[in-house]
Image (cartoon, rainbow, N blue to C red):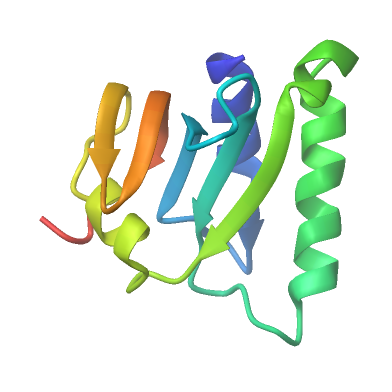
Length: 119
């Protein structure tokens, strides 16, 4: 699923700008569901619905129904969000296992893409 999400991350863009972070996490009480965490500077309240629908289309195009069902939530965060700040310190391809990140218990995770803006 991580390789498929690499394609989603590469294609989820706005005016040629890609997301700063795209991560897949099993966290907190959602131990059997994935959370997709995205940091994209172009994501605003004004374009929220349009961009979310674009993301949903990409997910449906690249993931099979079982993989889609395994996603419990999508979090689109600002660069300054505490969880985003910590995740943006990690390199693309990093794995996370049983780690507390800014108050969030991450049971399993993958940093699909990171531009590491907060080193």
